[in-house]
Image (cartoon, rainbow, N blue to C red; front, side, top):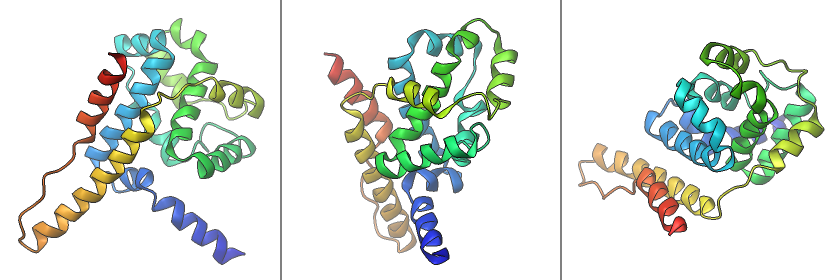
Length: 193
């Protein structure tokens, strides 16, 4: 039982999503933040613009939320539900959860300034959100149909980058990299045409 739990933990932590954050791979973190911004801007454009105006960056709250799998801001029973859904749905569910939290407090954020918004995001009460409220908010977050393709390309790009690093070590010429940031922008533009 303990061994199986450990194997499950290792499998989760070896996921590309967590590797980016734990290795502090800035390029990959930026790519994941761009995915988050995309979903945010399409689901809550008013709050997205408000945060941009105030310069409330996801860096102020999102990295902590993701790296702790929401245990700093959600009670353990609610966080456990998020973990279960993450195992089933993958990275997308973590983005939806973060946005579900923002959606739950949207009115507060829209009515406040930078200091109050950031303080609230950092000191969010674990008892403030019930499982039912969070799941209702999360389920209302829509994912663009092209996003799974972008995430697959992001993973492909990561694996190509890893191969490039190996080639550099063996002095072989590097392959051309796939840039997920460009792919994200291209996919977004093509769906709006």
